[in-house]
Length: 295
Image 1 (cartoon, rainbow, N blue to C red):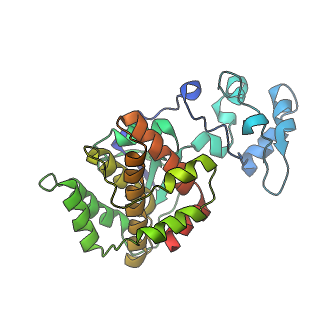
Image 2: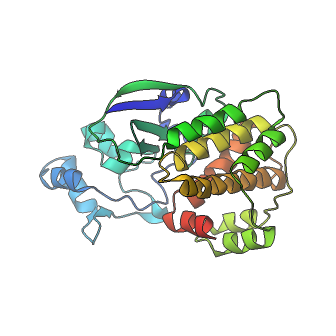
């Protein structure tokens, strides 16, 4: 199956020790079966260190150290597995993060905004609707009749219609897809019920107001919404499912707009940091995503 990616995808590279929010801190890192077997076969050198670091609970994972740091993250913020054994020895999660995949008639890959560097690239890239074939993957096309990619293309055409201002583009999409946002009170109830990785983020989210729209930040919000549509709507099962997912994306866009206002964010760096927090707390938690989708 052909693998496609947004034009900006090739601009992404992990910045490792230069990252201000390491993905090797604060996450339980699960180890896939193939990599686990490879680790268990390593008896000497750094392989023995890896073996000691693995917790063999229901889902094998690395035992986190103080501060929830991966045991293989050195003091400089570099991965000791890579330094000692090379990138090919990473487990699937570490090797792929922050990538995500869509599988429809073709395969697509993107970069998730929980990674600050990915967030900066996505929010600074106006070419989100241009896709390149970057290779092949071993996967089968689905048998879903509904074409989420074609529907996504219609949305992108509206989002990029420069004859309309951004607010009008959003209103047009909302009218076509019958998106009715829930009252702020209900949204605040849902945000209050989320399970936060960092409790310091909760009061930030509870400043949500659908009426908070920053001035001069429409391009960032458009690119964020396009990313959310790409990630969450492409694999929709049918028209109803697509609409539900699109409503979720619209809410996330409103939440980012509200965060920009409440946190007085002005620069790309500041807005990307907020997008990264939003992604980390909602997109990377299946429970939180479902709370918003079903709420």
